[in-house]
Amino acid sequence: MDRILTASEYKQQIESLTARVDEQAVTIAKMETLLKHYESQLLMMKRRTFGASSEKTDTDIRQLNLFTEPAKTNLPDTNETENITYTRKKRKGKREEDLSGLPTQRINYELTDEDRACPECGEIMCDIGVSDIRKELKLIPARVVVVEHASRSYACKKPECVKIGGGTPVIVKAKSPKALIPGSLCSPSLMAHIISQKYSNGMPLYRLEKGFIYDGVVISRQNMTNWVIKCAEIYLAAVYTKLIDFLLKETVLHSDETTVQVLREPGRSAVSKSYEWVYRTSGHSKHNIVIYDYQQTRKQEHPQAFLRDFKGFLHTDGYQVYHNLPPDITIVGCWAHARRKWENLLKSIHADKRKGSDAEHGLMQINRLFDLERAFKKLTPQQRYEQRLEKSKPIADAFFAWADKLGALPKTPLGEAVNYTLSQRKYLENVFLDGRTELSNNRCERSVKPFVMGRKAWLFSNTPDGAHASSIMYSIVETAKENALNPFQYIKFLLEALPTATTANLEPLLPWSPDLPEYCYAPIALASNRG
Image (tube, rainbow, N blue to C red; front, side, top):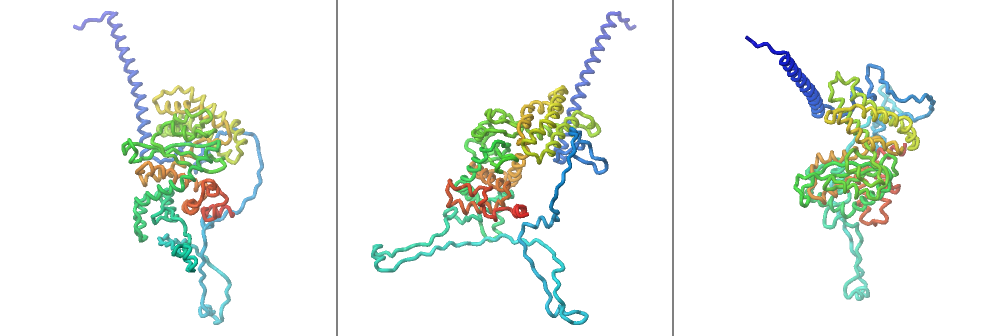
């Protein structure tokens, strides 16, 4: 027969069971939190693996639905109405616009006198003009031609001249252009083709080597590599240094970095990561310049050394080394990076739970800042500065205050977004200090992309000399593009001019110089200037 529990034993058992229930409730709560965390991580991994790379979201207030009314932007109402009247040129068709910068060759088709006889009366019909024009693009492939520079020599046969020369006639030889690289077959046009194909079009040298074979000439990739390095050292390094001098005179810059593999770095293994640091001018700079700087590490000493003569605003991501630069440099944080955290958070939530979530609210607040920035695009820097203080800064202040009150756990997706945003607040708010600054560092990220795309093709540099030469080439090619130049024609022009140029007269050769020949410009730029 079971023993009847005493009141104290019964009470003790109830307390024990209650404690176990409470303990299990805590365990269940923790497991539910972990489950949500792992679900969000799984969704994020699926999106990275299988999803689109675009950062647009369903709740992005810039996106319009084809079947509903446009979403409200909730921007501050200025209660002002302004009537604007303007005139504009009638827009050409896209095909005409695309072809407007290209040379045109017309082929006329006419009837013979016999074919012009009228089928009714037999009389010769009159020419009434062109009735139909059909356009097509004709491609004239490049071809390799051997150019022989033959210098003739001249001798004076007069006896008195022969006597003065000690029995040897006086001889004068005609001057010929200086060889780009003595003892090689390399010409400015060939070198410009190799450089533009690799550094502008992302073509690795082994593919160029195969292409030359079909043109009837054998040029090894080793020769091409040596030519690139020598041209960089002998000629283009001077232009590269000059571009850096002009870059550091600006007061608003952007910076970013990406990896590069260099196989034969002294004291390092072939799989060690090296870095390509990228510095470029901003949208309101006097000159458009992009500089690539190869370094073995990602340490703070590299931007400190490169920017030692720079004073002003520097746009960067949240990488810590930028935050320890000298006080003369004001770091401007990237709102696009902050937005990316909230965008990733939103996409880690199931679609049916996104509406009204903290992730949606945070993302929409940042989107409002970008919407306003587009509205400020055509303003002067001073006007933009004033409009930001009036309209954008209150939104940013409210956003930071709201994020601070969320109390999100640090290791959750929400906590990561909140912590990144608040830790970068000091730098994100610096965009409101000057109208020339930008809301994001996307301008520099776009300049990193050509290097990243090229790296996918050529994979690595063999030596530090090759990596440094690549930095010089990318700098000149991308700066040429920024100034609407044709990379091939501009590099060809440089390599023709630099052998006889001096350091003192390099400025007429720089990408923004008004003295550049017209053929250096891309056809679309010429058409735009003429229009």
